[in-house]
Image (cartoon, rainbow, N blue to C red):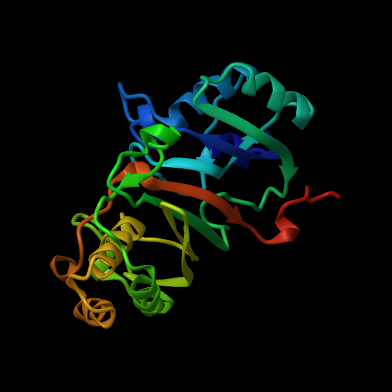
Length: 266
C-alpha cells in the first residue's frame, strides 16, 4: 500500500465512522484465524474497492469491547462516491457491525496518529439482580455491592491531568512513555446504571478498565478517595484495583482537527 502511495496512485482518503457489538469479536486488530472487526472490514472493503488496502483504526479495542463511534481511514484509488461506498460496504457487513458514515478527508489524516481525543464510556449495573431484565447484560458490568458515586467522583478527580499512568497500565504494556493526558473523568448514575466517561488524548493498554476497577474499590468502601493519588504516584500496577471486565466498555467517539475532515482540494 505504501509503495502505491509513493508513486501517486492513491488519490483519496476515506474516513469511516463505525459502530460494533464486540461480544463475538477478538478485538479490533486483525489476527490470523480469528474474527476481528478490522479483519472483517478489510475483507469487505477490498471486495468493493478491488485493490489491496488497510483499514487503519483510531486505536485497538480488546475482545468484547464495543464501539459507538470508532473511526478508521482507508487510502484508495476508487472513483466510487463516498456515499455509495458506505452503502456497498455497509450492506455486506455482519449484523454486529454498522458503517455509519464514509466521507472524503485530507490525505494527511491518519485515524490513529491524528486523533486529538477520544471518549470511552464504562457502564456498571449496580443492583443485586442481573441486568438481563433490561437486556443490558452484554453491555454493562454487573456489580451487586452498593457503590457510593460521591466517593468515586472525589477519587476520579485525581485521574485528570497529564501524568504517568504506569499504575493503570496492564502487564505487557511497553511504550516509549507512560505519560498520558486525561481531560475528564465524569461519573453519573441513572437509577441502577452508573456510567464512567473518560476522555483523553490517548490511553495505555487497559488503562480505562484499570481506572474503573480502582474507582469501584473506592465506591464499595475498601479505599479512601485519596488512595487513587497515592496509587498513581507509586507507578505500581499491583497497587491499583482489578481490571474491570471488557464488555462494560464502549468507545463513544474520536475527535480530529476540523481542517483534516475535508479533502485537500476543497
